[in-house]
Image (cartoon, rainbow over the protein chains, first blue to last red):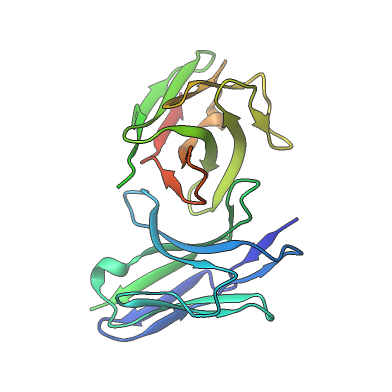
Length: 113
Length: 116
């Protein structure tokens, strides 16, 4: 079974600064996908970034980037130039294509003005 | 982009009654839809996987007679909470996977259920 661990229940960052959210996972699969989702107070799940395990290059979406370390089974999210609108719950998720997404416990990000 | 809707967004019902929640894929066909439950300040917990035209697959610990799932068409799945009790109060979220088999899943906005 796959497990996803987010060891930081809460993080805080100053506006315009950079913050990194941690995620580790455990799997015996070799082909899978990793995601970071954002859940703002509206509770709508929003896809932030995705990473295919077969790709060595780290994914980047504007201010969001990941550090994917396949051997270490680590998948951290870096948010640069943090904005007030980035405040939300962030969930790391794992997917093999055979089942639903497996989510981590989440990290609540606060952005201080 | 792919859009998934849920209806209602918020429902209050009395204990002992049943309530139906609809999940629709608006601009794509979804052979598979997923139902999650989320308690306050917690993560999403998968309840069941529904495949169009077949019976849903429930996760361990989820009562299939209480949470009835129907996926009658490629764009609609329903979750019926039968004989609801206050402990069923929660936030229910559906997601849908495009029939073309991409790994992408699209989430509905969720339904808040309050049982009084």
